[in-house]
Structures are given as C-alpha cells and as structure tokens.
Amino acid sequence: QARIQRPDKEVHWIQITGEVMRNENNIPVRILGTTLDITETKELERRKDELISIVSHELKTPVTSLKAFAQVLERKFSQTNDQVAAVMLKKMVIQLGRLTVLIQDLLDVSRIEGGKLQFRNTKYCFNELVAEIVSEVERTSSHHIVVESTDLIYCFGDRERTGQVLINLLTNAIKYSPDANKVIVSINSDNKQATSSV
Image 1 (spheres, rainbow, N blue to C red):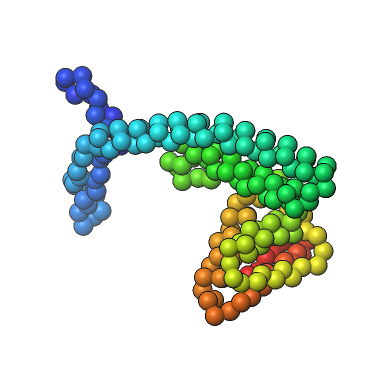
Image 2: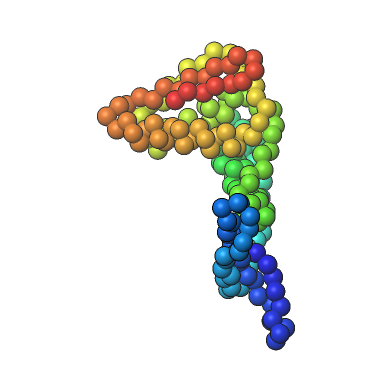
C-alpha cells in the first residue's frame, strides 16, 4: 500500500499488486500488476477504529464503578454472614473483571488490526479457575460437570485467555453430547505443564 498526492493536492491510498515475468533463463523481462484506489476503504477503517475507541472509553468508567460497588457489597454481606449473597457478588466481580479485560482489548486498536493478542501472564491456581468455569457453565446447562483432580496446581500464564479456552471446550462437549447427562473434566500436572482434559 502507498499514499500518494494527486495534482489537486488530494491524498489517496493505493494498493499495488504485481508479478515479475521471467524468460526461460529466469531473467526478469516484464512486470504485470494492478493498482487499486482504496482511499474509501481506509476512511471506513479509520471511522471504525475511532468508534471502537470512543465506545470502549465510555464503557470503561461504568464497568469500573460497577466492579467497585460489587466489591463493597460483597464485603458487607460477608460481614453479616449472608454467604449466599456474598458468593453471588464475588462471581459478579469476577465477570466484571473479565469484561474489563475485553474492553481493554478493544482500546488497543493496533493489536486488533495486527491480529495479535497481548497475554497478561500471572501466577494463579489452575484448580480454582477450572472450578469457576465449571460453575459458570453448569448454571446454564442440563449436564452435570464432574471435575477429577488431586493436588492443587499453580500456573504462570494468562488466566482470562485460559478460561476462555475452557469455556469453549465445555460448551462444545455439552453441545455435541445431547444424549448424555455428564461431562468429565480431569486436571493433571507433571511439574512442567498443567493439562486439562474434557
């Protein structure tokens, strides 16, 4: 792609493609190619990126506030021994945290354009992550999900991305086993890597 300025001073974006034609001795003899004016497409992309940035910024503030309010309520209900409400609010805080990560991804327009995901590596308990995902998926499913594990396993990696993969595996297992009523999730570790099988 190239940016050019016409004689009328108007700037245009041009996409250039070509192929070198060679003779029997593999010597270049001519170039065949095309040029395409993609100025309108570039402008649409710019408007899309601008819209994503504005919407993401607008979403970030209320979501952050909701997470803070939920955390305050969770502490208050824990102090009054209302464990049911406290557990539900804790789950709400977790989901709001995931939403915050997604909004942050939208804010990084260059990462979206490049098709790259930035990993947020932290140390976390793999068993706890699996338990959270299983609880979340099981609430909207008729299948019973059984977790088979032994010792606690701690991992270093992107907790949210790993959770997304587990959700996809579980929902696919449920979707493609309509005649079954149980899904088994096993967790293992060999001190070098953790493995989860659905």
